[in-house]
Image (cartoon, rainbow, N blue to C red):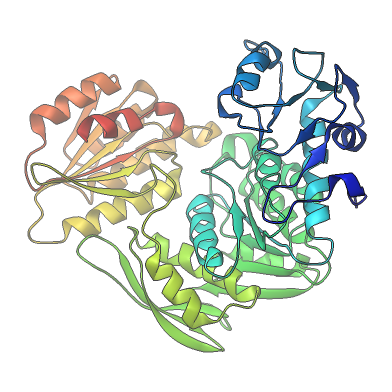
Length: 475
């Protein structure tokens, strides 16, 4: 474990962790270039000079096309007091060989300091899909129990995780980390920096299948979050996913399960699940300690499972089922572009789920669209779909499967981009009504001409397809 902070770097009550530049250099194994005497980092640690604020530490990376060091003046103008990089800048600079490793060491050091007397509980979430929504739900619930810091959006990689961890304050009670992976060992490396007290594993799907090679490899990678638990930690596992349920054998301690109740002995069970006219789940959250009703404000039956996972995480740290259920019911929104429901002028309903996509989340979003379309007052259901990335050798077949799935359930499919053409082909083969366009501009034009009052429109694709542009045009 990293050493505790020396006296001169103790946190201010009610403020962020204050670090003298000498301490930063000592922790990361760097040297100070420039006049670093008396410089204290009191603001956010950032990797974008535009996001710097008073007292910030700006971490400068050198990439293929961008050299962060040249943006040190911009960071300084926004309040940054120092730089962490590979060479001297206009600001006092802690010079290191590898800024990424240095950033991670600093995060581990600060979190270890805050949790030195068990004031801070770390909860980590992973899974092939649903982890951002689950993280958002969990963070909202925990925030009602104590000061909480959580991953913003899907900032869940080797940079996002330490940047999130460095946002902890002296009074932070819960740190909620979303952890992604694109290969074996990635989660283990992240979790080693900030070992979790509660590890939540949602599912093993086909997201990033092209990089992992097999679902077995994905399961192995997700299981690293369970084996990384601290002594006395709790593994929260999806009983409905056999690959996740099998991770109970990896847990060093207590296991808490969640799911629909189809498996025996589920600890946090979803009962009596129904959807309202806008596809929002209503269900009973049943636990050995009692039951409570939940009425989610977010869209999609799959969000009930995410809510059960979040509930299990909150129960693992001592919250009651009644308080958890009430908190879940109050959650009004998730991270942007994830199942956002908009009732637009002209009587059109937009379901914007354009942040990311994989086969499982595509089906869940289509199901949510269908559930809204079941209302007799709704007109047509229109699925606007783009490419799913990182599926490897199965990509062509999987896109056709999604096209067939959509065609069998919705009134009209609009497919955008050559990479997604398989969706169109699958929909046509299934006898569905499908239109193909080359790009987002053509899609916006088509929708402007064709969408009419009463229609419900889903927009869904991987982030690289930028279908958020289509959703924004509709709004």
